[in-house]
Image 1 (cartoon, rainbow, N blue to C red):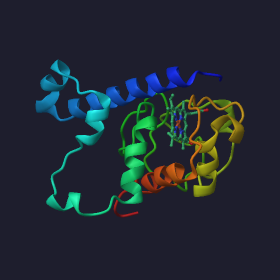
Image 2: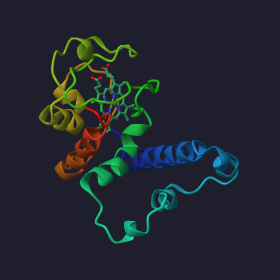
Image 3: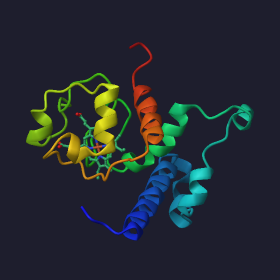
Length: 165
Ligand code: HEC
């Protein structure tokens, strides 16, 4: 697991660019423009849709901050209800669910047999260091060291439920 900071930074950069391109591609009409002229990741991160005038005045909520940080996860995880799995399972409704129980995903033995519930505490420990928390799981993510960044991501994960839940 030893990687040079540079390699990791480059990967994150590439991943961000991929996500930005995927997000744009999702907008149908903008697909061609996105393919023709991909935005550099840094600019793309700032170029989120700004359809409300109030956006500039309101402080960014923790969940919004988490959605931004989830870019590091979105390359492997879809989040909308019924969306197919990517490298990892779909995370809709993950908070409060038992680990390894999404029927559309072939989990590792470690995850399938963990028998834990994804409480906020467990998510926090898992995101901090996946291998430390659950030895043998297959999630290839280095971990997020900063507690405030993990808290933001968990706040975002909590929003991934249907309104009627
Ligand atoms: C490189 C791809 C990859 C990245 C990046 C990644 N994951 Fe995962 N994730 C996986 C895989 C694969 C699994 C299933 C692991 C297994 O079966 O052992 C998984 C499993 C999970 C689970 C358990 C799901 C369940 O149904 O029990 C959660 C929660 C999760 N990831 C959250 C995250 C979060 C949050 C991030 C970003 C901080 C993230 N992942 C980043 C690939 C990834």
